[in-house]
Length: 135
Image (cartoon, rainbow, N blue to C red):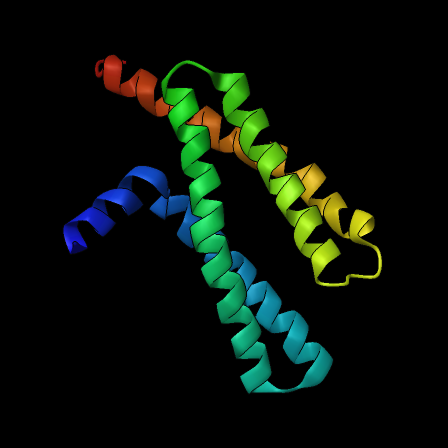
């Protein structure tokens, strides 16, 4: 059972990008909430929830980007994960009662495609290096 879970995580979640996103956004969410409330416990809870969500969801869509790029589908590797991230962000903000979910989704609209372009480019470069070790 544990080996199946490990295999699933290695196959469908990019540990590298999931952890990077979790750390970055976790720290940001902690800082925003601590600055606003001064409550360490509430700020830590918010940061841990954001980190877990980002590790799993961000790691999943990052792995999706890498998998499509590995198959030579560079554009789909950028557009599909970006679309998923944008729709998920808008949906979560709408369901959570964010006053203006459209405005809250703008950062994702801007940064998701750029982030997935970075991931796809790095994956393409990795693949090129591994297929031509002398270069």
